[in-house]
Length: 382
Image 1 (cartoon, rainbow, N blue to C red):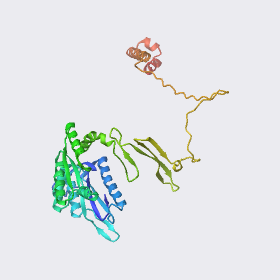
Image 2 (cartoon, helix red, strand yellow):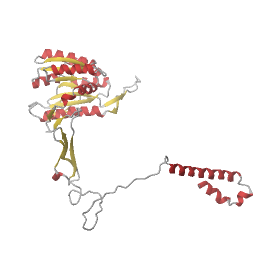
Image 3 (cartoon, rainbow, N blue to C red):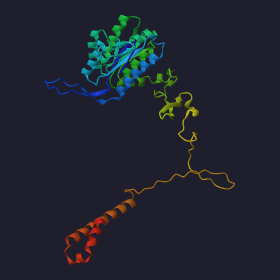
């Protein structure tokens, strides 16, 4: 997936979580790998990167006179496919597309986001490093952009985290201007004592910016320790939504109320007519613009919906009563159900025994005289 721009950011995502290698006969050209198994979370990650770039381009204050583009690839959770995509990005031999009205080619790729596997990322980084193209140096650029010269670093205790820590320290030393107040390694497994120690380091530090390179499980464990501080965090997004957290550390929900609008040409349009949000101070609030709502009725008015009521006549004030119908059923576990079931089975057994006796003695005069043409079907259907 590509979007043109003055500069391009590459991306490697595990949109498919497995791949099938073709059979190698060594007598003909091998077929391409086949990617299988769609991975929705990884696809959302790719869409998140595309959306972030779109938002950056929409804000002229962030990168004036510069338009970011992207070139996203599916690595199919296979190292050889990730290598191929990374080399294509680095060498400028990826799929070409129209840049401007009279310019055709591939703009420079300044960085690559990914891979989601630390082993793949390190292997790809070693090869891409030959092209002097880092996997991600965006973090240092962010520090410079906001003037953050004092930050903490948290990494996971694996190849990915330790490699990132070494690379970040080295790049910060070379670039200058920013320093790390502390570097902590988040433990694997259940280790609340170590997590509390790390939280104390963060509390005592004067750094107000924390850089985290860790897996989701590390972040969940860390958030459990930071629950008290999350309750005091609140901010407003560029869309005007207020974000805050409850006592459990969960973000207070904001729900948009959407309405389907039928256009005269037959198309449909989904429009926002209100929202329901919960805040720590005001609780749940409903905001809705009824004039925007399209009702698919001839009257175009809000429909009426209420239970059927009974009103008493006479001078007495009317009384509304709603009776819920009681649901009754017979269970096999109740005495009546057991008795009826046993009687039914007993009757079936007796009919089967009589049918067997009649069949065995069907040639005797007694059975023939008992109207056997009707007795056999009657016993069988009974």
